[in-house]
Image (cartoon, rainbow, N blue to C red):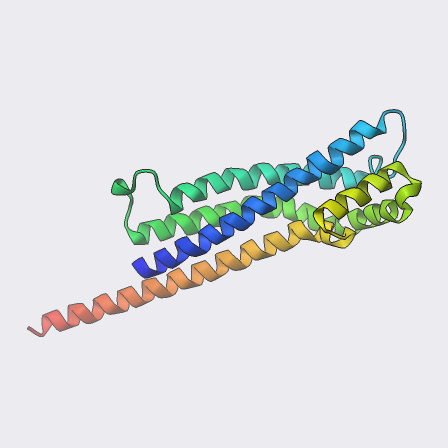
Length: 199
């Protein structure tokens, strides 16, 4: 199980690095897009700021930023504990890791589910604003934001959903790996016990 745990540590560190980049993206939606739209609006009307789907999209990205940051802190303590001398066994570490990841997904799926259900409406609102481009002030701000992030409208809407899919696949693969490792340990211990009885 130790080998499986060390492999999981390496994989989780890579996932946490990806998540750091993802959190920066979520933060940019608020700081570089929504906040600038609000500041530039003043007394002007705008297709994006008046659109419910876009407003919910911005709200969801803010919630996700908080949740991902919260669970990052928990996962980093599991992978690199401050007090390693009192750390639990490798089996225990694996169990705690899987439980934390499953708890994280159970919370995140609610917000991501809302994003998925509004995906088409959000995409339509952004696409309309983008196509107006420099003819509308909010379309111009959207265009500049997308250029700075190297994204298209479709990619902006899809990125959160794609990240959630990545997390689901990672947790599933991790659970299968740990389950097989436990089965192998049980089988190995059974063989050792059988060999001991023969003496």
